[in-house]
Length: 191
Image (cartoon, rainbow, N blue to C red; front, side, top):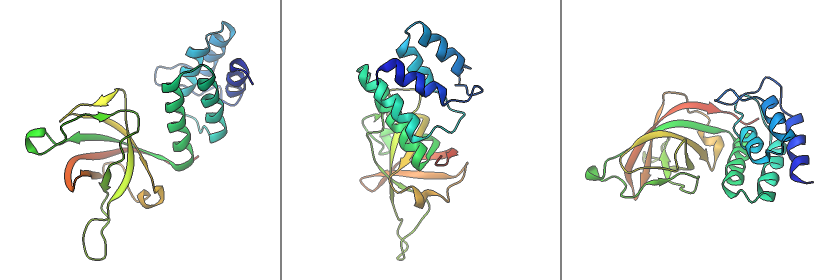
């Protein structure tokens, strides 16, 4: 399949009422496709948040992004595909300042960092039972040292995170020290 076919097929799977944060709809996407605005159409599709997109739909967007050599978009679509299968946690992360022992380098934005988290669970001996989750920094290429900002978390063992609730605070650790705290703001369950 070529790019227009992939995007046309993706469009047919989206409900007409679906929108992104800017209010763009699938009708807007169709309009861009009429004028060969494939990259804009793909970006708009990838940012539709209010409908239950499944893995098959994300596969269409990933293939289109790869055919257009849009590596960053393909990476984002892979992240979203994973979330459609396993769920994603949104949170606000506040990093510990460097002066207090915090990270000396920013957190990269595209889900490559996989730190351990204390999510409130403990081992039989009372020690924290740390869990791993990838971080995607929302709306920025990175989270700067000592800063605070929105993130998405993709747990590597999603089932053990299921007890978390909005407004719960969890701690991110590196080298056994707390590097920040994240307050859960939203939980997206698998679709």
